[in-house]
Image (tube, one colour):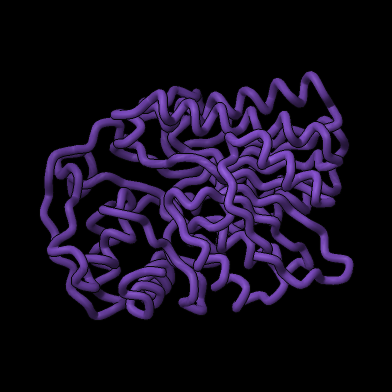
Length: 346
């Protein structure tokens, strides 16, 4: 999907760029005169999502169908581009699936990153932002969790993210020409304010908000809430939900900081709100702000899920100059705007 180049636009390689988070980052990058070169294998995304981005921000994105593990194809794409930096999102991300298929998650998430880094050696791009996860902390950390907390993932998904973090730290030690930011996401929800792009998972959603939205839209009979016996106020799991556009803007802030930083920089930063909401909190807020009903049923816990996880986000403010601007009500409104305008997704 070629795009009309913008004069003077800096190019960012955006792996997994057609996915939920990637499309929102592409929009945020376009506001800073950056152009996204997206590669995606469309395993859990659609090329139509990039077409929507192009409507929101004409000329901001060009897309290539490519698996990040395909060294030959990745090399061909990189050779044809003059890249400024990289935002690496490509990877599998379902905790439950990772428990069932740990080798797949290691091959895709860790092996794919190794392939990408090898291919980047032949380019001048040495600024690299990595999509990590709060799952690296596990369930034993004191809340709110900060970046100095012990990393003890309790599922293969979190283990794969931590393995990549260690790979990147080793890379900076061996080759200080790199500048790397590791961003540990909490729970992205919501959608672009236009309603043109949003979260559209294939099959039964693994994440809470699209499950809520699809149930409210009638695509699902009821929402399954996994676990009602946690040691929380209402028995349901507590998470730090962050608006996807706040998250996207955090990536832009990280790239800005890396551009000003000396070679050999390695930053590890939480991206979260600093506040936890239970699953039932989110369901009730969604119903209230959107005036819709979400039938639900409490079921057994999922393997690999932590009972409580929310961020200490102070370092993001001091190191990146970034903090969230959108609250849980806006997350719920924007998610429903996307779903109600696109009841069947892309």
